View 1 (cartoon, each protein chain N blue to C red):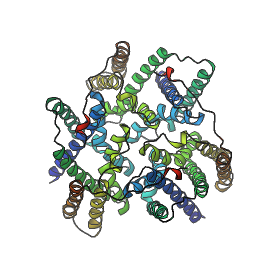
View 2 (view 1 turned 60 degrees about the vertical axis):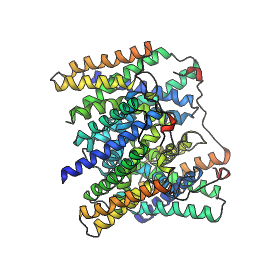
View 3 (view 1 turned 30 degrees about the horizontal axis):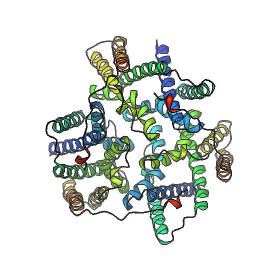
View 4 (view 1 turned 180 degrees about the vertical axis):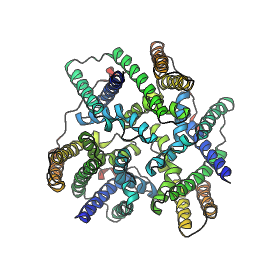
Length: 209
Length: 209
Length: 209
């Protein structure tokens, strides 16, 4: 079972590394830049979580396989694009939604193991799920995509919240994860399918200070 | 007295959360984006300080009230803007100056408690005071405001310096804070009133490397 | 010998502080902004390394001379530009290459002392060498230069890799450094001289998701 979890984690790492490599390609970075952005996208959220929770060594220092998985996924992405131009958008969005679900629940679960308050566990779930993508976008000089498109982080928040509430209510790890992960997947896939978005908060420029 | 300090801290958190929510509104983020930017603006400086000083658990994990204060302030800001368009610029600038004074002195004081050198305490005071705003601006893809407008961080630097020097010279916590906080407030309010700015350092594009 | 290392380290700090001050000048920041960007450029990479490795107190808290070296170098840069406009580009590029070589090897060496896996040591070498510059560019709202120009981080990567492989193979600290540092310097200087660059990874906008 532990091994299953590890494979799920590696799957999430690969998915986020691919999204980092694709963004780097849109910015025409060189090959090294592609690898760096892929690594940061895949491992940034978990690193931030571990450093804030004082959980050392951080995940990818404890277990090198994360690093190699991210690098391989990035190289495979470059090779794939070189060989066959078209990128399977739909498959990628689906994989990314799986990655988001896995990382958000894993982040909240790890935080709960550290005996932090429930609010912190929820925040750490969202952080693990979305911080890598935020770092990717900031490094590529874009307003983080997460703040601009259809519901994304909100799915992570909902799932992390469900997981933490169920765990605090006494549910087991697997039971809570079995409810929380489909929550994230469902919200995210519905948002993609019907272009759901939260209401925006507009402020006119004259209010500028 | 401890309780007074806690209220002052929460006041600073609220003020910075409001400034984060307003920036998010200028970028037309959605409601979740507003909350995230507000949280990062309000808690980012203190988190960075605690992580660099190895002071765990970080402030908002130790005490959940910071999180709720920031979220409430952000929601109140959105509600306020929806109901009555005009934003009380002057009141906000005043409140922000108070927040800057509180956070800078609190940051320097916390660092001194960790037995770090005086230079580190000053840097940590400024970090606590201004890093949240820097993160807010970087995430919203702007050159941090702090580097561009009238004297802001310099007020924080002056106050943190005064506080640390007085403490090292043997002054009590309250005596030092009573001098340092008005120093920050005074410099900042004078800068706003008379548009004071430090000289700029211009470098021509031909010097580009 | 220890003292020689410390001087080399301070030299690297000064070089990166100068590059930070020059970038701040291109963005017309005020004097305080120049100092902050210089400090972050010079000390950011080492701070990130120490925090991720849980190595406390971080370098510049342990030893204040780093802070003063960075501040002095930044002030000297401003004074120099005010007095005599021309900036000695070639000298600076050379100095920067030295700084990159010193920091990358020192970062990898420090990580190995913490008993981390080899892959982590290489990553920490590159992080120490380039993260300060990345932070500088992100704060100044540019796509990090490192991702855009001739081979830079790749030189750091090659040197850190050589150093770690030699150390793991049993070579002494100085022997490994004597091979690794010229590796970085050589690659970087060749890249500057002949405008060497890695192939880029282009992705068309229609692939956007």
